[in-house]
Image: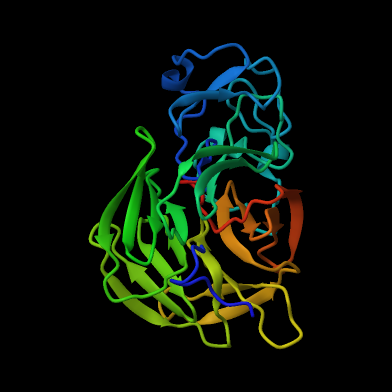
Length: 325
């Protein structure tokens, strides 16, 4: 029986994607350039260490205009501006910088651009590059971690049955911040562009104070919708939730839009995939991660999800957006 991951299971992302937070910090910044790594390695600004360079290329970038429409001077071509991804409307997005815009499904994979977001299993925090289709272990996670998400300022938060956690990328450590008062078995965490946190638990939507851990009920989702494992908020501050299958003969999760004022859910469509326990909004694209190790691209207009990659035996319990979504 497909149930939301609650207290009983450890259910449970920027150009820099951000480590899942993708906190990524500063793709191409002087701070990153100043780090010294061995040949064949690159400095990961999220984990703060040198890792194997899986990106290819010389590490110095190619001259001219890359596939994402960004030239060496930082100018965006018409081709790059007009790209529509994931069914999301990219025509009226806020200006988050050309570095972010360079992260795209048609990007130049030989470039230096770092595009990663955080995802996690019951035991490990990962960095996923959804374009180069690579995955990197960061460190272990708190026991019973249900879900994670990234604040617009780059901080990575997580939730367990016991409380609210924050990840320090510099020391690669988790710190318990506050108990989640007034809520049991939350399985989805999402943060809007203003820094307001939300939690999903079964068929209910809550707000959560990311400093005190205080929780307040927004409302019920209705329609028989029940959180499959995550919620996410995109650049337009739209709240999306993966909902467990409804009905005896349905096996795939559904993409549901949630009203942030009432909690009421509205069906966008069936995804065609089960166990979507992680949702990520990054670079104007909606991604999903599943309990059987799959990385999905989700069309927010139809709800349909396409498989981008299969990472094998990893059971993804949650995912986080990039700070700029």
